[in-house]
Image 1 (cartoon, helix red, strand yellow):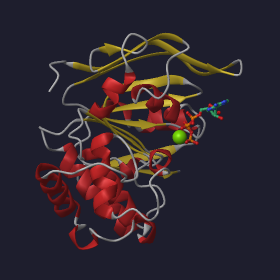
Image 2: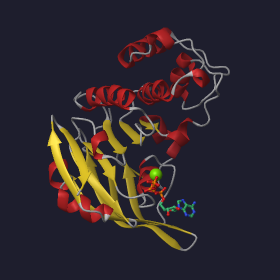
Image 3: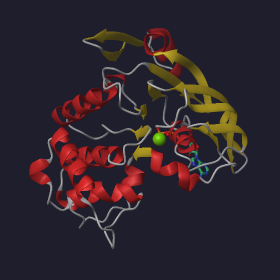
Length: 263
Ligand SMILES: Nc1ncnc2c1ncn2[C@@H]1O[C@H](COP(=O)(O)OP(=O)(O)OP(=O)(O)O)[C@@H](O)[C@H]1O
Ligand SMILES: [Mg+2]
């Protein structure tokens, strides 16, 4: 474990594309042990913010440091094995013919597709533990292309956790799932969030209902700027969600989960 208390630090970070400011002057600090939800309307800049955190993107201006290393001064290929990413885009390269076990284990090389790697017993044991934790043991030899969306999301979470990352980034992990599959996945995400030995987590979601119990902080993004950020109960409020989504919203919290309704 790298001995850093600030796992992510963005200082006046901006991203411009084709002359347009997609993120402007973002300041954000995420510390060891924290779990953050990112919310905001479509096109607000959430995925771009996560791309900075995953080192897939460098800021046009300002600075980004991940696990104590400044982007631009560090070889990102040293950092990437420490960062687990669960997103639809990150999973596109996994061949449909890959088995569930191989889809998880190849994350150890930060590659997809099993070509020449040799897996040792330690890898296979860790994979078995994750398959068990995710409730996937019976699917271990199935081809990933044959899984339902909910099953696939659980495999992707296991894949992101496999290398024991120090940072886990998730872009809409529960999108498109039915209520049963969503609650099943959120149960696993809550278990990870509430495990003090688990990595720092940052998750984008469109729905406050999808914030797993155990998340500690939130950030609201709108028009490429941070509207609010801080401890979750001070950010996920009627006033701030109404402002972020430009729609009157009622917000409540039941059994450690948030709910939002239009008025
Ligand atoms: N390569 C690019 N070139 C030009 N514009 C881009 C590029 N990538 C993203 N954008 C624009 O930047 C804005 C923010 O995109 P981003 O994907 O970060 O939004 P988001 O908050 O994740 O939205 P969503 O909720 O729809 O996923 C959008 O208007 C998008 O069209
Ligand atoms: Mg997005």
